[in-house]
Length: 158
Image 1 (tube, rainbow, N blue to C red):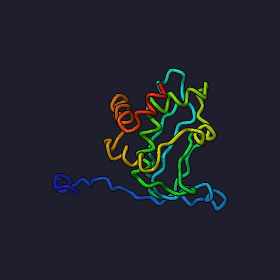
Image 2 (cartoon, rainbow, N blue to C red):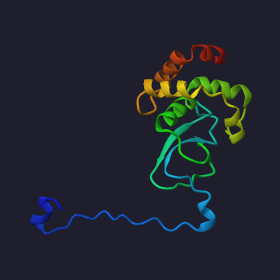
Image 3 (cartoon, helix red, strand yellow):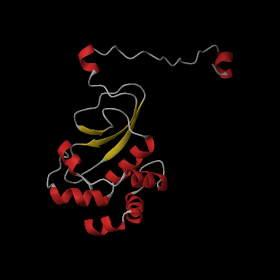
Image 4 (tube, one colour):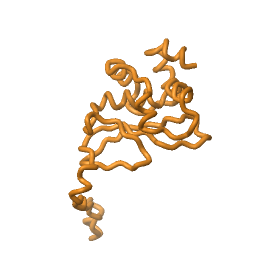
């Protein structure tokens, strides 16, 4: 309670930490352990600028993700936070979007499509994450970061 609440006699609302409901045994195998994951939207509208839209999920506790997403993980476990950030940046770049559009004319991003995408090396993705802010920068800034690290890929994708 703060001082103003004590003097007026009103109580500040308590934050309750309810325990999560128990997960049925058959569903437990669908849960991913706590950690960082890269989540990719499976569907995009024709009007969206990019077909591949990705973000980093930082879960506290086990998580089940919606079937409208693809999830990048390491053996059904979490990804190093810096690597997850680098992957998210690469996947949101215009370079990757141009590559994706060369082999896919539809607005759906299947797990098979994700498996066929080219990915920079682990070291390059970590360097991309180091050079970028902790969030997703504006498209022009992101594309400039990608162009600085991978000039030959950017030129061949355009």
